[in-house]
Image (cartoon, rainbow, N blue to C red; front, side, top):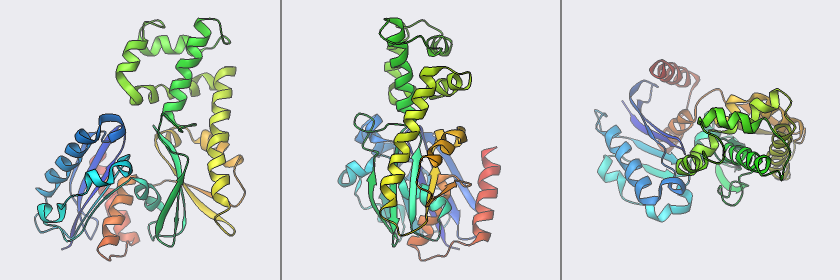
Length: 313
């Protein structure tokens, strides 16, 4: 029975699964985020390799393929390149960015299309003729991450700061942030800085809460974020002749479908938005299967997702 390992690494968590060609899951693990832009390349490599080694210990036969799709490592490809095939007793091994995880969770027959990730970070990636092409946006949280969870959270804190020192309008975010942190502003700032990018991203929900009750600052932030993310789709549309699929995923997209609807309304009519019905770890699993020349069937998809969901409860 062919056996595989798939890994999906992000800014907040890293998921690993050992599974058979039938879709039967032998082992799964959930560890901390592995993005080297957050924790550094050394810590990221140790976390990823540790997760893969632990998973390999639960495989009863030599592995046919190992696919590791992890956020941020595209900037450190040489640093992560090593002979893991021999160590893991695997015929194939690939360690790359996490974009295929998302796009292949829906377009799992390697179809052409785009992937729009809206989570802690954001960006749009294209796939044509089976190859992932350069991305639009997604240049890292210090450069270009408008519309993401981090951006929304940071802008929420920024709006509170401007409210407190009278440079900006009054906003409900000031009260919401106080309740969230259990402290007044700016006394809460040290704790926010200590939490880093993930902590700021965790504040994004405050903006959506404020928007629901009509806070003008929150409404503007969400409108600006949606327009920026739609700009990514508008830019990508020139690469396709006619309709093209856009797989939309990530924590913010999943939690706030109305945000995705706003982005869709601002995007070209040729963009066919597909909300993810399977987690990115399924996309990573399909990539492991593709490496071994296997076809991903509906039967495989159903069994894998049924068992994954049961283990996640």
